[in-house]
Image 1 (cartoon, one colour):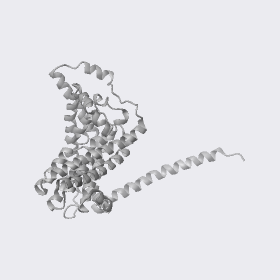
Image 2 (cartoon, one colour):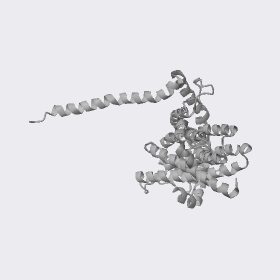
Image 3 (cartoon, helix red, strand yellow):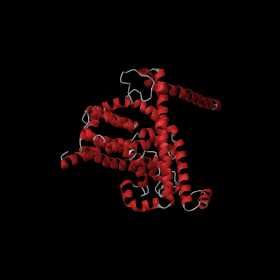
Image 4 (cartoon, one colour):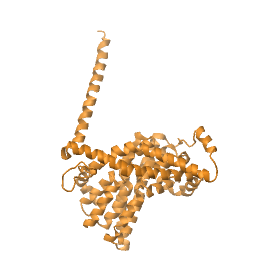
Length: 397
């Protein structure tokens, strides 16, 4: 018997119709189940208001702050690039950065920038062609992991040192161990990311080092002397503004949801729809797996596990919890070392990695970047714990 061509065509059409029909249905089911996590305990109106108020809070207090950092960092980086400082740093620090991180010496400038400010500050450098010419193509996405590992370093370290009035002079040693642990976590995270990127791009592909003809012409027409300095500052600052606008969608959407998963109900247990309210799901998950994490980090209590999980979404929120723990007397010097390492290495990377990878036009590797940085943060905390144990044995803290 001859096959009827119409049946095969009808079968394909039926399969397509079934796929088209079930795809939105499945999406709606998953979407409703996810938001029911917030709506059931908080109430529909309160959950929506909290989401909007949290996004507004992040926009006004975080995103614009990041934009301000990006503008200043962009202006300074453009100036450093114009006068050859980046090239000098690349030559001087390549013997250190390449063996440790597998990155050019110029990436050390990104480490310093993020340590003094926040994770996305490295993107201002990454968007500078004069900076990126020192990198191979596979090394560019790893800037997200390297920069995030040291993000908010100065703020985190300063916050820990401020606890010395309660915990004594040993806090300085603990903070030092935390910073050294961060270096270990940064090496792990960056090296793992480079492993994946080498498989995707190879090791020979170069990044776009040369500027377009129009840009080179404009650079050639720039004035000299003091006017040249002003021109470089304005050009770099403009790049910072563009970057600040580019990261707004990712930061607001991801960070708002992560913060609602991290924060809990108000003290009286009544939801009001204000910012920084949530269901505290992430700390509960941490408590469930405490039997694994406690031996690795040496935490004194199960409640201490909430800090690293909070740092996934917001380092600032984690720091405020640490201050409260210290006030209640529920924190040790070992905890300070581990908190310093994890809060600095993770520094809310779930909130910023998506937008940072999008700004670098490497969105398809976001999952790998998050996986590598998760492992890097865990290694940072473990390294800080054992370093503190060693130093405690030596100096008898």
